[in-house]
Image 1 (cartoon, protein in one colour):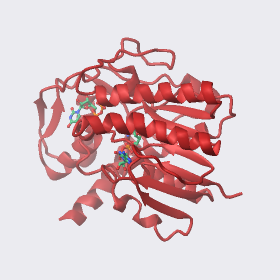
Image 2 (cartoon, helix red, strand yellow):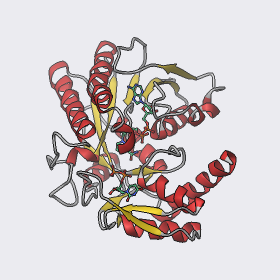
Image 3 (cartoon, rainbow, N blue to C red):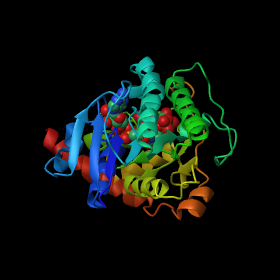
Length: 315
Ligand code: NAD
Ligand code: UDP
């Protein structure tokens, strides 16, 4: 039977891909977004689908709808965006979670939380597994996001214990691909756009910090597989690509793929920028039978093609 699925943040980068996939799999999708960082362009190709609905709504306010399943993705994810209005970021993460959990409780439906590798902060354990409790600054510039997402995880587990709610918590590591916002500010989109425009590539710090980048299609597979695990599996579960790369190496790779003549320049490292990040995905392999299939080179090629198209239209 066709399920009616709510995707909060469905107008954003990951959310729009998720809406598309869920529709393609024969579901009805209700996309709820306040379009703070998401755009209508991300979902315009879905608008004519009679099983797709969009509701402009801020999840810090209660929402009364009838659905069979909830993916809670609403929250700005890029540091420049979540630091623009940090109080609203905390409200979205915490009040938003309470509102969506309340909705799931009333409807007695499953709810998945898009949590983040940021719950590990600047990790002292490497690679990070779900049993690690993290190393997070509670009062820094990234705290509105990191602590907001940590508190959201707490709420998910308290609703699960207290109200027997069916929950799924995904700890998403750096994800990239088509539909990242042009001004997103995250490293993959920044470097590709700079390279394509022939502008300087801005490496923060000396570029020795590492990240592990997961292509969007793999992430969507992981999120849907997690939602469909048996009810007794709640997570948290890491979803990400365990192949780790330094930011300087990433810059060099993107220069090569784009055949760009841009120069690499070094800028100050932002406060509390994690030094290393790499997921241990043993649990996801075991419980979800999931692991990323798209290599970084392959994913970057596709993302470069996307930004070439977007930039040529913007001219
Ligand atoms: P995004 O900024 O592209 O999407 C977030 C969406 O949420 C946007 O459409 C935005 O308009 C919407 N939104 C923000 N505040 C809202 C509110 N109060 N009410 C309703 N809608 C609101 O970011 P993304 O990369 O697609 O991230 C989606 C989710 O995944 C986020 O929860 C993020 O924390 C999580 N995540 C993403 C990554 C990543 O690398 N992309 C990594 C870890 C976690
Ligand atoms: N970064 C960079 N140049 C940029 C944007 C980001 O060197 O133009 C670095 C940033 O300091 C961090 C890494 O790239 O070390 C990943 O940053 P992003 O904002 O994409 O994600 P996060 O820090 O949340 O993992």
